[in-house]
Length: 217
Ligand code: DX5
Ligand code: ZN
Image (cartoon, rainbow, N blue to C red; front, side, top):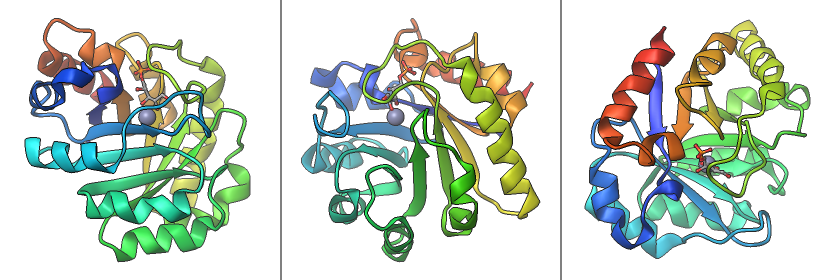
């Protein structure tokens, strides 16, 4: 699959979200980080803001739920307009049931792994998913340094996906920039979340194009 770049609005100006979404037109998905002050030590936004963003842009919405009890809340984000919903396996009570419900409601189902969560125990779950997210920072904040020690996990995830002949997308999130995206792509990632590297740039749309070029090698 051609590499996809998903700008994270966590690094945008929250008082100007509609403009910030339009500033990255041409991006594949808009990555929206939902945090609840419990699963991670930060608080961002909820369903009403996602509904408003849905009306403000045509870019499909990639929801990253860093919240407790995603089993309960995920359906509401699909109704709000999410095209893809990522839940954390560390927080989900019933990941298979949740993935099936997300798909049944018409969105792409995705599961995220924090840095200390290994991928191997979830090999048998992969066919239930449309995307696997390997976190390359501890979730909670933008602008953190990329964790190089996650590269072997990305490689192992790619091997599992290929061994089973799955069409699962492999997303990386955290510290992805011009300095790190090539290593992620080489390890087998094909969907790249970038917050500070896009919204910290003079021209965010141009930053998206540059990152995509770099990821394609
Ligand atoms: C962190 C979030 C990321 C964050 C990435 O918990 O999941 O999506 O916005 O920001 P950067 O690209 O600046 O590391
Ligand atoms: Zn994220």
